[in-house]
Length: 289
Image 1 (cartoon, rainbow, N blue to C red):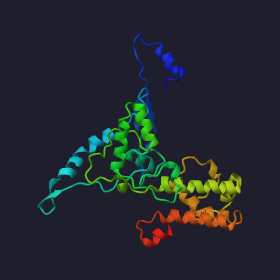
Image 2 (image 1 turned 90 degrees about the horizontal axis):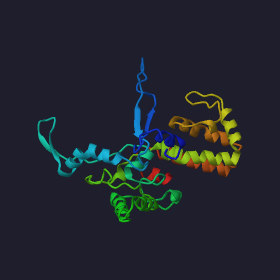
Image 3 (image 1 turned 30 degrees about the horizontal axis):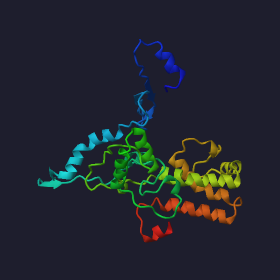
Image 4 (image 1 turned 90 degrees about the vertical axis):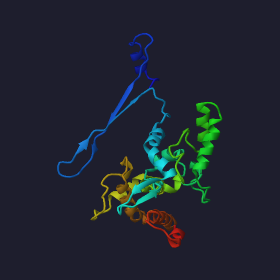
C-alpha cells in the first residue's frame, strides 16, 4: 500500500512528524438462516495497512483460547459425571476440522505441501510416500531457523524446508500431540480442486476447451443433476456441489472424443476421488485406490 501515490498524498497533509496509519475495512453479506424471513448479517473486518503481511496473530489467539484445555490435558481435571461420581479426565485433541488452506496455517506448513507427510509441493506426484510429518520435525525446523539471526533469514530458511515462519505454534504444548493425524480430509480443496481440477485441464488440452464446453452444455437436463447452460470455463469460485456434478457427467462427454486409453485414465482418477470419500476403509478399498 505504501508504494502507491495515495500514501504520499495523504502523508503530505499530516502535521510534521506525524505517521500515517491507513485503516482497511472489509464487509461481506453473510446468510445465517434460510428459513422464512432469513437472517443476514454484515461481518466487518478491520485492519491497518502498515501491518506486515507475514505478521499473523492466529497462533497467539489460538494459544490464549486453548490454554485452559492444554493445562487440563497435561495435568488432568476432576469432573462430576452424570452418576454423581468424580472422575479425572484428560481432554486430548482428537480431530481438527479445517479446509486445506487453514490446515497449512494450523500446521505451520507452506501452502501446497502435504499436510500428512514431509512431501514438498513439487513432489506430490511422486508415488513414494514421504516421511510422516510430526510436530517435533516442524518445531526442529523452526528452532534451526531462529538461529539464522534476522527475521528475513528465518522466513527464507523456513520456506526452503516447506515450513511457515511461526515462532510459537499454538499446539506446541499439547499433550500427546500429533496434529497431522487429527486433521480431517478436505474433499473440496484436496480432491476436487486438487485432483479433479487438473483432470478437467487435461481433457481441455486433449479436446480443446471449446469442444468440452460444447459437450457439457449439450447434455439434456436430468433430475437431480445441475445443467450447465454456460461454459464451465467461465465459472469462478466453483462450489463443491458444482465440482461433484461435473465429475458425474464428465465421462459421458469424453466418449468418442478421446481414445480409450484416455477415457480409462479419466475413469481411474474419478474412481480414486470417489473411493477417497469413503467414511471407512479396509485393505480392499485401499488396494483399489
